[in-house]
Image (cartoon, protein in one colour):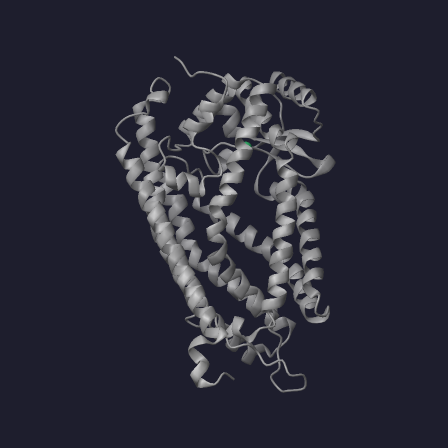
Length: 437
Ligand SMILES: [Zn+2]
């Protein structure tokens, strides 16, 4: 116990102060950025930027402005809610109350720890439900993007919850077991397990999980197939297959992606993308994705993720042994003295507190990662322009901006902070084509 005179500066109080301060500072920062974005987009709603005036109709520009503003306004509410939820779990005692209730019901053991994780996920999911419903059936619906019926939405929800339990509970149990049984270096074992699990998921996801939600059919358009195959050969790639996914079942937004690792790699086009773009434009979009591989962006991102998780697990390993980590975040740690009645491990508590607290700190790294990502996008664009056609890439980007109602006039500060892809003006300006009528 701390003597009362030192209580104001105890590590526990300091933790509370730093956590609450950064949580609120983060909220203020995000609210400020979103307000800037809303104001900037509204101010430029009246006219298409000159560089795009001959390509984008005013009505499309205004739809993009209204869509961006609608999403950002709702985002303000979401941020406030998310902050309240984090406070509710931590300093206001939600996690502590849940832990105590489960302890008195189940006693202290693996079952109680898994129940704690499970309840936390379910309660969080239930709080997010109205948010997700509003996003899909009000905002996306109003702008003509939503294609989901309430029935499909519910089926998705049930499927993903079940899948989450089937996959999530065993891996959670394994990590909790390692935390308790693998000694002081448990975090190294847990990290290895977590990385292995992620690699396995990359192989399993396209083959077994994605097909539970979408239909994948081999690309049938022979001329497009020939074109895409020629491009891939030119760039030195072999893929396991070219597939079309029925993305239009859920949304009118278009996309294309690579999935899988090593030899199991496949190219997936959304049907919506093939509908919106010409064959040349599809090729250019694919060349951009190949550019990410050629420049080793995917590998580097993976290695970065490995390193960050290692640091995260090491930090968790240290924090989980400090009483102030729990008390400072509003939780009374369980008694660990062996042989004492009521003794229970703190592993699940430590995991959850870490997951709740980490974003409060990582928010401030967002602009660094976004900047790195934008640099990668420029490199992939340049690769696509060299291997395919810069003109096709430019017109594909314009079409995608228009069809997805992405704004051409984001607030510069907002874009610098968040945007993983450079704003349209910057991307097109770097392509070796002048967008003349
Ligand atoms: Zn990209």
